[in-house]
Image (cartoon, rainbow, N blue to C red; front, top):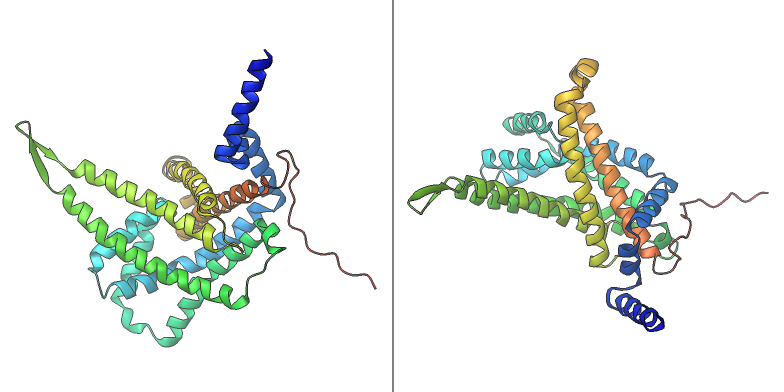
Length: 319
């Protein structure tokens, strides 16, 4: 019995050394880690932060898409570009992409009204969501902010760098999607039968969207918080948020198509309310993924059952 106990201790020590103390604790107590993350998210007022991010994202998404589509329409076919935007908007606002794409097409048809004042206004509103998201990340990663602060010029530049990066990413996705759709129109002769590649094309398009989602989330977790985390930590949060969003967006589609009476209640405001609800859920999961990273980092210096440390502001000095 003693030799068995020694063997277990040796195996446990070897495991801790191989995967690290944090990862070993995560795999050993996944349920407890999940509860710890939810408690930390609640202590940091995560739902309130998600509401702010969702509101400013609602103000930002249309100007951002207009600027991006106008810029990219000079390089790729407009119809193909709008089709790609519509397909992947379904990942962000399930069931509401058609209305947004129609507005984009209408704006493209009257792009001659775009002046410098309107351009500057849209560029400003496009950056709002990124600025608010950075502030929300500062609350979740308050343990980093207390040690190191970011220069205000860097915070001012980050949103516009992200806008440029998203535009280049959309251009790449449009080109790849066009190639995958072309593959789906082909057939292969095998075993004296003709096999369509449409199913393969659909699977590849889905994987392209899912991998792109994880890539964007990873970049957010690498750039937005103060102090860059390791790629391993960012991927952990990105995969958690992406998997939760995959489940949530399917539930949203089911809700909007079966149970929701949103059209009867809100009338002409239906699209805006539905988009805001989708963005609220997406922002909540985005910040929850950030909370996963924050709690994972805290495991390196705190006990597993340590209480959550919410973000607090200094008390005012009494006269």
